[in-house]
Length: 183
Length: 93
Image 1: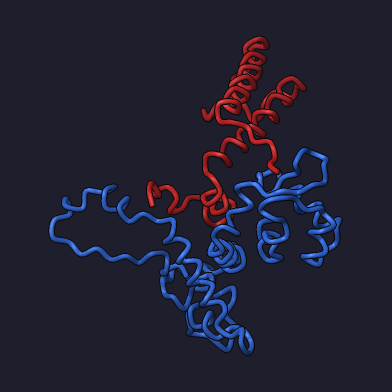
Image 2: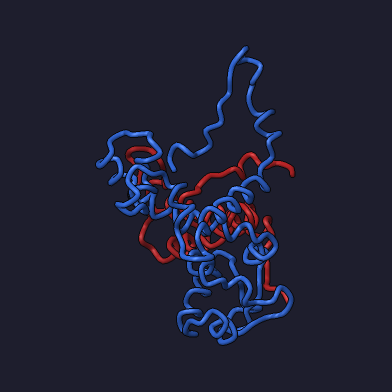
Protein backbone atom coordinates (compact mmCIF):
# COMPACT_ATOMS: atom_id res chain seq x y z
CA UNK A 1 0.00 0.00 0.00
CA UNK A 2 2.77 2.43 1.00
CA UNK A 3 4.73 1.37 -2.08
CA UNK A 4 1.76 2.21 -4.33
CA UNK A 5 1.14 5.59 -2.69
CA UNK A 6 4.82 6.46 -2.93
CA UNK A 7 5.49 5.28 -6.50
CA UNK A 8 2.39 7.03 -7.84
CA UNK A 9 3.03 10.08 -5.68
CA UNK A 10 -0.36 10.27 -4.00
CA UNK A 11 1.20 12.70 -1.51
CA UNK A 12 0.92 15.74 -3.76
CA UNK A 13 -2.61 15.00 -4.98
CA UNK A 14 -4.28 16.35 -1.84
CA UNK A 15 -3.69 19.93 -0.69
CA UNK A 16 -2.25 20.46 2.80
CA UNK A 17 -5.15 22.80 3.46
CA UNK A 18 -8.47 21.82 1.93
CA UNK A 19 -9.62 18.51 0.51
CA UNK A 20 -9.78 16.42 -2.68
CA UNK A 21 -12.25 13.87 -4.00
CA UNK A 22 -11.37 10.31 -5.03
CA UNK A 23 -12.02 11.39 -8.60
CA UNK A 24 -9.60 14.35 -8.31
CA UNK A 25 -6.89 12.05 -7.00
CA UNK A 26 -7.54 9.33 -9.60
CA UNK A 27 -7.11 11.77 -12.46
CA UNK A 28 -3.83 13.07 -11.01
CA UNK A 29 -2.22 9.66 -10.46
CA UNK A 30 -3.75 8.26 -13.66
CA UNK A 31 -5.34 5.23 -12.03
CA UNK A 32 -9.01 4.20 -11.82
CA UNK A 33 -11.15 5.78 -9.15
CA UNK A 34 -12.03 2.26 -7.92
CA UNK A 35 -8.38 1.38 -7.32
CA UNK A 36 -7.64 4.75 -5.75
CA UNK A 37 -10.62 4.41 -3.43
CA UNK A 38 -9.55 0.92 -2.31
CA UNK A 39 -5.92 1.92 -1.79
CA UNK A 40 -6.80 5.05 0.19
CA UNK A 41 -9.38 3.30 2.35
CA UNK A 42 -6.65 0.79 3.24
CA UNK A 43 -4.14 3.55 3.92
CA UNK A 44 -6.66 5.32 6.15
CA UNK A 45 -6.60 2.34 8.52
CA UNK A 46 -3.08 3.52 9.43
CA UNK A 47 -4.04 7.19 9.51
CA UNK A 48 -2.46 7.87 6.13
CA UNK A 49 -4.98 10.34 4.65
CA UNK A 50 -8.50 10.58 6.09
CA UNK A 51 -12.01 11.56 5.11
CA UNK A 52 -13.20 14.73 6.89
CA UNK A 53 -15.84 12.46 8.39
CA UNK A 54 -16.23 8.80 7.36
CA UNK A 55 -18.25 8.68 4.14
CA UNK A 56 -17.86 12.38 3.34
CA UNK A 57 -15.78 11.52 0.23
CA UNK A 58 -13.63 14.55 1.05
CA UNK A 59 -10.05 13.38 1.49
CA UNK A 60 -7.65 15.38 3.64
CA UNK A 61 -4.08 14.93 4.78
CA UNK A 62 -3.20 13.69 8.24
CA UNK A 63 0.09 14.42 9.98
CA UNK A 64 1.26 11.03 8.70
CA UNK A 65 0.44 11.50 5.00
CA UNK A 66 1.79 15.07 5.13
CA UNK A 67 5.22 13.85 6.28
CA UNK A 68 6.57 13.11 2.75
CA UNK A 69 5.51 16.60 1.62
CA UNK A 70 7.17 18.29 4.58
CA UNK A 71 10.34 16.22 4.07
CA UNK A 72 10.66 14.99 0.46
CA UNK A 73 13.75 12.93 1.42
CA UNK A 74 11.27 10.56 3.08
CA UNK A 75 10.01 9.59 -0.40
CA UNK A 76 13.52 8.48 -1.34
CA UNK A 77 13.87 6.58 1.93
CA UNK A 78 10.60 4.74 1.31
CA UNK A 79 11.44 4.14 -2.34
CA UNK A 80 14.86 2.66 -1.57
CA UNK A 81 13.47 0.38 1.11
CA UNK A 82 10.24 -0.68 -0.59
CA UNK A 83 11.57 -1.09 -4.13
CA UNK A 84 15.10 -2.35 -3.46
CA UNK A 85 15.65 -3.60 0.09
CA UNK A 86 12.27 -5.29 0.61
CA UNK A 87 12.44 -7.54 -2.49
CA UNK A 88 16.03 -8.43 -1.55
CA UNK A 89 15.00 -9.26 2.01
CA UNK A 90 12.61 -11.89 0.62
CA UNK A 91 15.59 -13.43 -1.19
CA UNK A 92 17.82 -13.75 1.87
CA UNK A 93 17.32 -17.50 2.11
CA UNK A 94 17.79 -18.04 -1.64
CA UNK A 95 21.00 -15.97 -1.41
CA UNK A 96 22.20 -18.04 1.54
CA UNK A 97 21.62 -21.20 -0.50
CA UNK A 98 23.53 -19.84 -3.50
CA UNK A 99 26.47 -18.15 -1.77
CA UNK A 100 26.55 -19.79 1.66
CA UNK A 101 27.33 -17.58 4.63
CA UNK A 102 29.23 -15.09 2.50
CA UNK A 103 29.82 -11.53 3.69
CA UNK A 104 31.18 -10.41 0.33
CA UNK A 105 29.41 -7.34 -1.07
CA UNK A 106 29.37 -9.10 -4.45
CA UNK A 107 27.31 -11.96 -2.99
CA UNK A 108 24.53 -10.10 -1.19
CA UNK A 109 20.77 -10.47 -1.43
CA UNK A 110 20.53 -7.19 -3.34
CA UNK A 111 23.10 -8.44 -5.84
CA UNK A 112 21.21 -11.73 -6.10
CA UNK A 113 17.93 -9.90 -6.66
CA UNK A 114 18.87 -7.10 -9.05
CA UNK A 115 22.19 -7.48 -10.81
CA UNK A 116 22.04 -8.88 -14.35
CA UNK A 117 24.38 -11.78 -15.19
CA UNK A 118 26.56 -9.31 -17.09
CA UNK A 119 27.45 -7.66 -13.76
CA UNK A 120 28.68 -10.78 -11.97
CA UNK A 121 31.37 -9.82 -9.47
CA UNK A 122 30.02 -6.29 -9.04
CA UNK A 123 28.34 -4.77 -5.97
CA UNK A 124 24.90 -3.24 -5.72
CA UNK A 125 26.49 0.20 -5.69
CA UNK A 126 28.01 -0.50 -9.11
CA UNK A 127 24.50 -1.27 -10.32
CA UNK A 128 23.03 1.82 -8.62
CA UNK A 129 25.46 3.93 -10.66
CA UNK A 130 24.74 2.47 -14.08
CA UNK A 131 21.04 1.56 -13.95
CA UNK A 132 18.74 3.79 -16.01
CA UNK A 133 18.76 5.16 -19.53
CA UNK A 134 20.01 8.56 -20.70
CA UNK A 135 19.45 11.32 -18.17
CA UNK A 136 18.01 8.76 -15.77
CA UNK A 137 21.31 6.89 -15.52
CA UNK A 138 22.50 6.81 -11.92
CA UNK A 139 19.10 7.76 -10.48
CA UNK A 140 19.33 4.93 -8.00
CA UNK A 141 22.56 6.17 -6.46
CA UNK A 142 21.04 9.66 -6.17
CA UNK A 143 17.98 8.22 -4.43
CA UNK A 144 20.17 6.13 -2.12
CA UNK A 145 22.04 9.29 -1.13
CA UNK A 146 18.76 11.06 -0.39
CA UNK A 147 17.54 8.07 1.65
CA UNK A 148 20.70 8.18 3.76
CA UNK A 149 20.30 11.95 4.17
CA UNK A 150 16.81 11.29 5.49
CA UNK A 151 18.20 8.81 8.03
CA UNK A 152 20.80 11.36 9.12
CA UNK A 153 18.18 14.11 9.38
CA UNK A 154 16.39 12.00 12.02
CA UNK A 155 19.51 10.77 13.70
CA UNK A 156 21.00 12.25 16.79
CA UNK A 157 24.64 11.14 17.16
CA UNK A 158 24.65 12.36 20.76
CA UNK A 159 22.39 9.43 21.61
CA UNK A 160 25.11 6.98 20.54
CA UNK A 161 27.71 8.88 22.53
CA UNK A 162 25.64 8.73 25.68
CA UNK A 163 24.07 5.25 25.32
CA UNK A 164 27.23 3.22 25.82
CA UNK A 165 30.21 3.24 28.15
CA UNK A 166 32.76 3.96 25.44
CA UNK A 167 35.49 4.82 27.95
CA UNK A 168 35.07 1.31 29.36
CA UNK A 169 36.54 -0.08 26.12
CA UNK A 170 39.89 1.51 26.93
CA UNK A 171 42.18 2.11 23.98
CA UNK A 172 40.00 0.73 21.17
CA UNK A 173 39.22 1.37 17.51
CA UNK A 174 35.56 1.68 16.59
CA UNK A 175 34.60 0.80 13.01
CA UNK A 176 31.20 1.88 11.70
CA UNK A 177 30.17 -0.63 9.03
CA UNK A 178 26.57 0.64 9.01
CA UNK A 179 24.45 -1.92 7.14
CA UNK A 180 26.72 -2.01 4.13
CA UNK A 181 27.85 -5.57 4.68
CA UNK A 182 24.34 -6.73 3.79
CA UNK A 183 23.94 -4.48 0.76
CA UNK B 1 -10.16 21.19 7.37
CA UNK B 2 -9.12 18.44 9.75
CA UNK B 3 -10.29 14.95 10.48
CA UNK B 4 -11.11 13.69 13.97
CA UNK B 5 -8.07 12.71 16.03
CA UNK B 6 -8.36 10.77 19.31
CA UNK B 7 -6.19 11.61 22.31
CA UNK B 8 -3.76 9.19 23.99
CA UNK B 9 -5.83 9.07 27.18
CA UNK B 10 -9.05 8.50 25.23
CA UNK B 11 -7.42 5.55 23.46
CA UNK B 12 -5.95 4.21 26.70
CA UNK B 13 -9.45 4.21 28.23
CA UNK B 14 -10.85 2.26 25.27
CA UNK B 15 -8.02 -0.28 25.53
CA UNK B 16 -8.54 -0.65 29.26
CA UNK B 17 -12.31 -1.08 28.88
CA UNK B 18 -11.91 -3.74 26.18
CA UNK B 19 -9.28 -5.58 28.25
CA UNK B 20 -11.72 -5.67 31.16
CA UNK B 21 -14.40 -7.23 28.94
CA UNK B 22 -12.04 -10.00 27.79
CA UNK B 23 -10.61 -10.57 31.26
CA UNK B 24 -14.11 -10.63 32.78
CA UNK B 25 -15.43 -13.11 30.22
CA UNK B 26 -12.55 -15.53 30.82
CA UNK B 27 -12.93 -15.25 34.60
CA UNK B 28 -16.72 -15.68 34.51
CA UNK B 29 -16.44 -18.77 32.29
CA UNK B 30 -13.41 -20.29 34.04
CA UNK B 31 -11.31 -20.00 30.86
CA UNK B 32 -7.57 -19.34 30.79
CA UNK B 33 -6.45 -15.75 30.21
CA UNK B 34 -4.37 -14.97 27.07
CA UNK B 35 -0.80 -15.91 27.93
CA UNK B 36 2.73 -16.34 26.55
CA UNK B 37 3.05 -19.45 28.72
CA UNK B 38 3.87 -22.55 26.68
CA UNK B 39 0.49 -23.97 27.70
CA UNK B 40 -1.40 -20.75 27.04
CA UNK B 41 -4.63 -20.80 24.97
CA UNK B 42 -4.27 -20.89 21.15
CA UNK B 43 -6.93 -18.22 20.61
CA UNK B 44 -9.38 -15.99 22.43
CA UNK B 45 -12.84 -17.48 23.10
CA UNK B 46 -14.95 -17.37 19.95
CA UNK B 47 -17.77 -15.42 21.55
CA UNK B 48 -19.13 -12.20 20.02
CA UNK B 49 -18.67 -10.31 23.30
CA UNK B 50 -14.96 -11.17 23.34
CA UNK B 51 -14.40 -10.81 19.59
CA UNK B 52 -16.00 -7.36 19.46
CA UNK B 53 -13.87 -6.22 22.40
CA UNK B 54 -10.79 -7.65 20.70
CA UNK B 55 -11.47 -5.71 17.48
CA UNK B 56 -12.17 -2.48 19.37
CA UNK B 57 -8.95 -2.99 21.29
CA UNK B 58 -6.92 -3.66 18.13
CA UNK B 59 -8.31 -0.50 16.51
CA UNK B 60 -7.38 1.57 19.54
CA UNK B 61 -3.96 -0.10 19.81
CA UNK B 62 -3.21 0.67 16.17
CA UNK B 63 -4.19 4.31 16.64
CA UNK B 64 -2.13 4.44 19.83
CA UNK B 65 0.92 3.03 18.02
CA UNK B 66 0.50 5.44 15.10
CA UNK B 67 0.13 8.42 17.45
CA UNK B 68 3.07 7.41 19.62
CA UNK B 69 5.43 6.82 16.72
CA UNK B 70 4.43 10.00 14.92
CA UNK B 71 4.71 10.60 11.16
CA UNK B 72 8.44 10.05 10.60
CA UNK B 73 8.85 6.92 12.70
CA UNK B 74 5.54 5.44 11.55
CA UNK B 75 6.46 5.77 7.88
CA UNK B 76 9.72 4.00 8.69
CA UNK B 77 7.96 1.31 10.71
CA UNK B 78 5.49 0.62 7.87
CA UNK B 79 8.40 -0.06 5.55
CA UNK B 80 8.51 -3.82 6.12
CA UNK B 81 12.27 -4.19 6.41
CA UNK B 82 12.63 -1.50 9.03
CA UNK B 83 10.80 -2.77 12.07
CA UNK B 84 13.10 -0.93 14.40
CA UNK B 85 15.14 2.01 13.28
CA UNK B 86 17.30 4.94 14.13
CA UNK B 87 14.10 6.42 15.53
CA UNK B 88 14.64 4.47 18.73
CA UNK B 89 17.74 6.52 19.49
CA UNK B 90 16.31 9.77 18.21
CA UNK B 91 15.69 11.93 21.24
CA UNK B 92 16.50 15.42 20.05
CA UNK B 93 17.47 17.11 16.83
